[in-house]
Length: 313
Image (tube, rainbow, N blue to C red):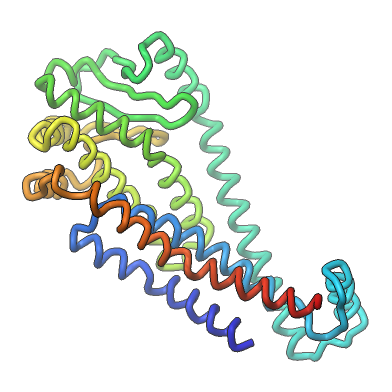
């Protein structure tokens, strides 16, 4: 019981205050890829660990003898149906089941809403993919528009859309930086990270960590794509592209280059050397962040395994 309470306390603290640590690291200009790993794993791990802990609280495994996993399940059912579970534990189990059902239902509704949104835009996205199929692999779909625009759409295959105005208004090196930025979105699966964060936040908006995740991840994917483009084409080219492309429209099913934090991103490119950072520090930093983010799910798994193992042996 002490272990379960400790894990519950850790999960509660993470849900309430975990976002503050990540935002503090972002203010110190930690590599955006490292922070993306932290936000994503912490969000998913928190939800999974919460459901697992609620499930463990609802099981009356200490109320019967069990010599195997099947006998354990049957014994739990017998303890519940015969009324041998103490009243306080019945109350805890009932509350746990209500909480778990609420979380699962809200997650299901959020996923269903997201699926409906994808289906609603599917005909337009499919048409864009058909048009892009005539282009060479990795090349964008050029559309007739006087505005300088570029965006990426995830899927199989992913699509990069760019306007004729982009080529007309930007120098070649800035155009190349823009396309590298959008390719970074596709290679990094940034659309999926944003979708997961928005779905979890819509399902459980009362959790500060999950509520803050969508905006943070949307900002971080842009910073990560900027860094990639700067390494490939130089920071000056990315800055020129951001300055020329401000105010472009954003479609609900894609990521556009000049959509968020334009001035901050330009300032960051001016003060950061993209070749000196990262490749040496990014992988150790990402590993450290992933290890820390997975501590709660690992502790929950270890605790659950030990509880079940003790009950069946």
